[in-house]
Length: 140
Image (cartoon, rainbow, N blue to C red; front, side, top):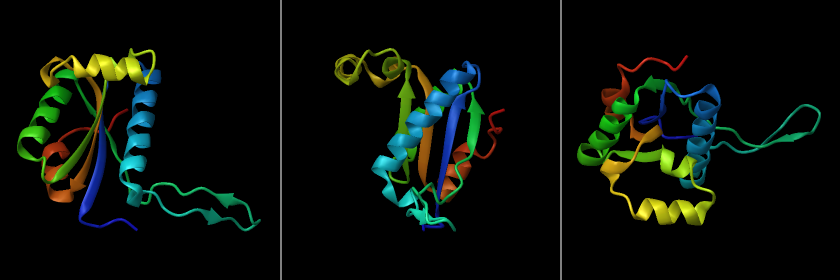
């Protein structure tokens, strides 16, 4: 079980095509599960004996923002909340790279201010996450 003082949200650019939104959420979720294994529950056997792999054991609201809003949120977390919130980002640089080596090469040549965020995942102190994202609407 995760710590009840922690919260996780995803914030995605609502102007993106639905397929890119889904892909962004999937990629952010994969990184979240890899880096913060405590958010994934253990595997569970159903009544027939089939083993179901663990899924997240905390709610992860998917919230809506704009391209500009994501840039500002990323900046604010980085500059003011880096000790309280872990930040995962997915950018157009990653989306447009042909493989991970290409992504690493491109990303290392850019400054943070040059990045275009498709989505962010914030995981950390509940009060800080709520403060930053509490007014954002659910993605629809």
